[in-house]
Image (cartoon, rainbow, N blue to C red; front, side):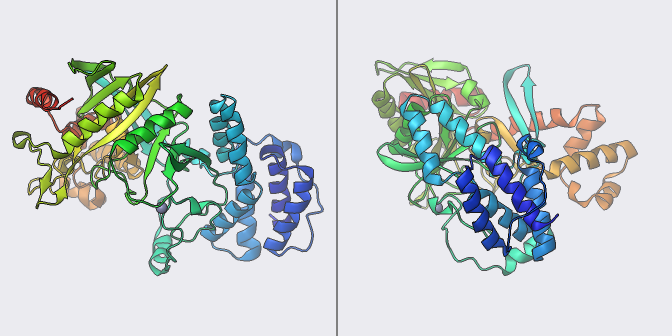
Length: 496
Ligand SMILES: [Zn+2]
C-alpha cells in the first residue's frame, strides 16, 4: 500500500462517514501531506463506493498502518498512533461535536445526542468495535437466584515482551496527569498512554460542577460511557456524588450510571480522578427485585434490600432531595458502622477507613432508584487480599478488584481464560496427572476445581457461572440468614 493512496482512502472515508465537506477535503488533505512528508495527493483511482459501504474504519486504519510501517519505517505501535492522529484530524471538531449534542439535548432529544457520539466514536476508530465484537458474553442463569452476566474480554490488547521492554525504558512526562483528564482530548499518546486524537466529549454540569461524558474505548456492554470530572481530584463518596448521579439521569434517563468506591480492593483501577461509568445496558443488579422492604418514616421514600448476591440497599423516590437525605444518612451510618460478629470493622489504626459504598442509579419514569452496595476493604491474616473480596480459591478466575460493573453482576474476565479452558479440556481428555498437567501447562495451578467440574461432564461456562456467584457471596458484607438479621439491625439503627 502506498502512503498517498492510504491518505486518499482516509479522506474518502471521512467524506462518507465523518462529515468531511468539500473545503475540508482540500484543507485536511494539505495538512496530511505536510504531516506525512508527501509532495502531492494520490493521482490514481480509489474505490469510493466500497469505502462508503464500510461499516467500520478497520480497513482504512490497516492500510494507513501498513503504509506507515513500509514507507516511514515506523514500529507497529507508532504507526497505530499515527493512524489515530489521521482519523482524529478528519473527525468533526471537538467543540462542534459538543455543540451539536447540546443542540439536540436542548430540544429534548438527548438519545439522539448519545447515539451521535456513540456512532462517531465507532466510525472514527476510537471504540475498538471489531475487537469488542470478539468478546465472549453469556448470561448465567440459576434455578434459585437472579441471573448474572459473564464476559471474557478479548478486546484489550495483551502486551508482548517488546511492548513491555519499551514501557520499562519510556520516561513519562507526567502530562496528561491520568487517562481521565480532559487534557487527553487530542493527545498524541506514547508507549505508556494511548493516542487520543479521535476522542470526543459531551460537556455536562452535574450538581453544579463541570463534567464530561465519553465512551469507553473497549466498551464492556453497549454504550458503555465514562463520565469524568473536569478537575483531576481523587474519588470520594458522599452526597455530592449521589447528587451528580441523579443529575446525570435527568439528562440521560435511558442510561444507568454508577460510581466505583473510593477505596482500593473494592474500587476500580483509577482512584485519583473522580469518574463514573454508565450506559445503555441494564446490569443484573439494576433489574433485581426487592427481597424485603424496610419501614422508614420518610414519606415518599422507600427503602429495600435487593434480592442479589452482594449486600445492596435500594432507595427509591420521585423526590430527589428526600432521596439524597436518606442516601446520605445510610452512607454516613455505614462508614462508621461496626459489627464485629460479621467482621465489619470500619476503622483500624485510628485513621484507616475501610467501609464505603458502590452506588448505581437508574430512573424509571419519574422515579429515581439509587442502589447502594455496602462495601468494606479490610484485610486480615486469613484473607490478605480482602475479607470481602474474591477469596483465594477463585483467584485463578478473577483476582482484580471487584468494581461497580462486577458488583452489579457483570463479570469482566481476562482473555487468558480462553486458552486455559482449552488446556483444561486437553488435560481431562488425556487423563493427565496433576504433575504431568503442570509440566505441560505451568499456568494451570489452582485450576483443580475446573478440572473436576469438566470430569463430571459439565462445561466451562457453567463453571464460570458458579464461581461468579460465589465471588459475589464473598463480596457480601452481610451473608445468609445471619446477615439478614444483621442488615435489619443496621437499618434499625439508622436515624432517619
Ligand atoms: Zn486525571
